[in-house]
Image (cartoon, rainbow, N blue to C red; front, side, top):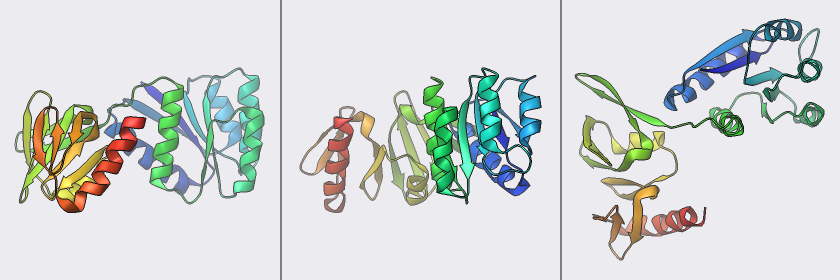
Length: 233
């Protein structure tokens, strides 16, 4: 289980950060536990007795501030990925002396938090598989996005074609597109393809894992650029 800690003397920021982190970790299918602290002194006392792999630490707190707390953790030889939280970019440079991994500015931007979280997961060598949760009459199904070759739609019905089977559910393709990572690209008003499985882009079609799908004129240029960038990674 991944163990995280959030230390901030303002409850509203702790709650917001926990919510955003929890949403992203659940999407990745990672079991986790987040511990809250509202003071640097409380953080040090708590981490003397408990493990923590990722720490989101506010710099400006009453009593022991975040930099002092981070310095104390390093003196304790704690191997923790520290991400500083601050309202002022000027404080960021203080992170170098305590080997902070990164920083986040308030007010929070979910995309920034997710990006920094994934940087920490990579540093810890934790595989963060992302899932799409499909709601069906029989219950919820978590489908690994890495296995989805493409999504196709027929009005409000969406078909997820994976490497081993097809899933059908009700959703607008435009709403689905907004939730997916940028490795999924629209090639037609009825298709979103995963660049991982895109073999070739032809005049009016895209070859996805050997299957030809239609490409609309309006999507052709963006698709070609996305495919070229993906191939250069």
